Image 1 (cartoon, chains in turn yellow, orange):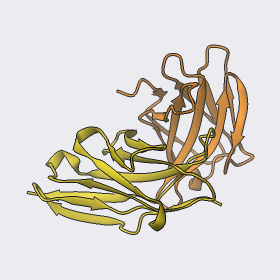
Image 2: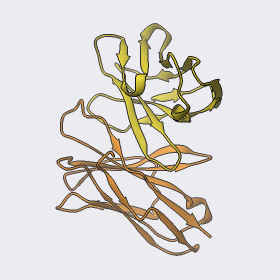
Image 3: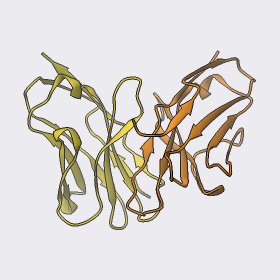
Length: 113
Length: 113
């Protein structure tokens, strides 16, 4: 069965500092991996996705993620955090050609001035 | 703006009642998905429709049902409501390309009192 683990429930980071959110997945085949962000009162917005090819994926809002098959990880990074990045971040994994995505429990990011 | 529209934004109702949540997918998207987000369960996939037909089923209770109409909008019907059904219900849509990710609406917050 597929599953996603986001080990960090809550992360606090200073504005301008770097951010890394961890995501580990369990999946029996080639995974399709996603990161979504949910701002308060909003729906989930797709930050980036990985299907194949280059294991370093660039997304919107200055985010990137790196797929590491050997570690079953897909960690999200941002070099310099802005106050507007305060939100909840979800990692998700889905099978090929089927969008029954499994989401992680989410990581809440707080940005302090 | 994801292009996915959900109404209403908020819904407050009593136990035992029935409600209908509505979703209009992005223009051209044939697939509609419903998710439930609660504090204890996280983001759970409920059901997927593709061009009017049920495509996949997740953790959807028998008291819940959904349908997708010829104009591709979808409705999620929740009946015999219980306190535990209080949650944020998201609709998402995707295109026909298998690389097409999910685009989420802003959700309907259901409060059962």
